[in-house]
Length: 290
Image (cartoon, rainbow, N blue to C red; front, side, top):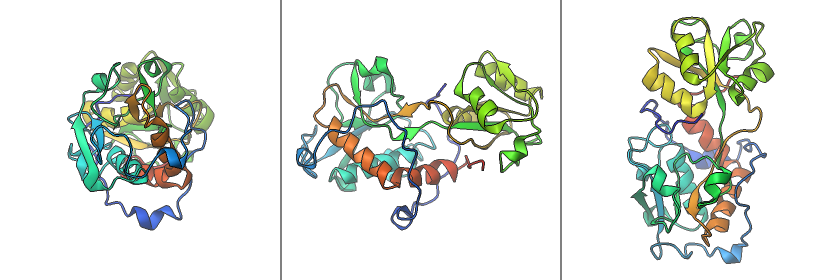
């Protein structure tokens, strides 16, 4: 389950993107399920697309805008994972930061049928077949990762590797990718606990029945920042199963969908998305478990 109401939890380091992109790994290539990138370069004139406001690129998101996806609830500062992704997409479309306009749009209004007041919206929108009936999605810019969380007093609070979790008693919601992450990736010696939902898993963690639980990354930020006393993110688990995908939302049938997907595909192909994910998610409070 993905929670959009992630708390103000982490700060982001300044992004030296230009310096690190060239040597960064390419993000997972199994992203799929969104509108394909089909536009040619000629169909996407740089800085001259048929946008809501001529010469400007209008980007929507909710208010407040939470960390780590944004910083200080100020999308225009370019900080936080989704703000950084949005500006990178804008740049690939030929719009400088000065020509980007942010507009406040609630989550539900963004994915409702009907004309939009934005060119695209970014707000942790999972790509689903149901939502595709009302809006367009770009190619996915983020594949949701599974994450181990615990509390400061737990024996696994300082774990840096998957091997350090071998002796841990872990748990997750039944029938989820989170549970699959335990059985297929972490593979602890002790059989994991299974819970009906994440609330039950959280209670087990609080009363010490388990050493840690596995949830998706957005939920991990929310639980450790807003729900758990002394909650700690131990780290992200390598990708497993069929991950949930986040895509940019556009008006249904938008002429920009192909151009925006093309920009996202370029960012994935040259490693930019991987750099942004590491900078604003991994290095900002959710390290990788090796």
